View 1 (cartoon, helix red, strand yellow):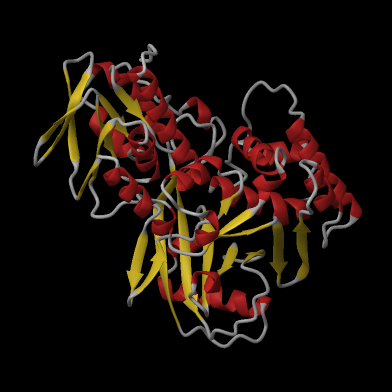
View 2 (tube, one colour; view 1 turned 180 degrees about the vertical axis):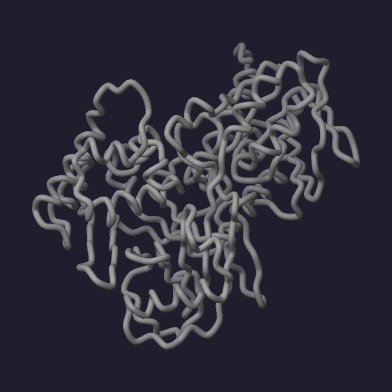
Length: 439
């Protein structure tokens, strides 16, 4: 059986790895000159950075499983720490939530009841929301996270310093628009099922070393082929079944094709195939959200106590100390979702963020250099009702499958969701090869 995977992001790589480990011939075709998709490395003055600062958690089980398969030891690429939520505000008490070594969900109950910076009624309200996650009421449909929080009777300070930042970090969509259905699933799976799921996994290296580079080596070792810098511009079929793909350079025959590309690229490839016409409208309806990451370099003795700190009350949302990545003095400030920062020029944004850092950590000198990376379409917009628009992996064109974090994974636009989608497509093909009747 010949399989072509279109797209070398985490979804496509996950599919190719899973297929190769089951001795299925794979050709992976990527239009860009490097693998990784939207989670890729950039080089500045000889120093490697990620195009956006990412945080992993222990609940990323498929990512961790595939890392092991391709030979990556977790402790080499991640610093694992129990959940420690520190949200600082220049004009209000800090909020600090630390999870103890207790079984889930007791660890979160204890963490919220012992949270610093909240009075008792606020701690009790946060715990009430977690109970509602574990015992969700029957509802007529999805609502926004803001509505769900109102129904859960959450105080505004808890919303501002816990739920809203967490929603932006996980769904990259403001609570006024974000899907409560997806948010509740994230809360349940990440914080309330296994204690280790809530652990923070902070990268020690650029994301290429976490999975894309070792995955590519694994694919090649197992007989797979990777074509970089080659764009697929057409699907080949007889109208009922896929027969391969076409690039400007060549045709690639295949009995199975996995399209692991962003929604707009997927729609362009599906157009012109009558069997796939019904998929175009849902793909077009998926909106996008930006992520902005500012990198600033200070003196190496910048007084940061933990690798990751929340920033409330300003433009910046999360500050990462990149010392753990052997970049002493460098910090990354992440701003998820839309906002006035997108209209600011880079210098103005860097200066504004530096002022916020100085207000939270008095004493640091002016930053020595900095740059900004803006991903204007970093993720799909995880709005209320989004799951009704997301497409399943199977299509009406036999042998054509869809992968990517935008497909019907039930999760937001995360690397774990992308990897799960790719693995799901691969496992269907493996079952088909083994004799199971899978479309």
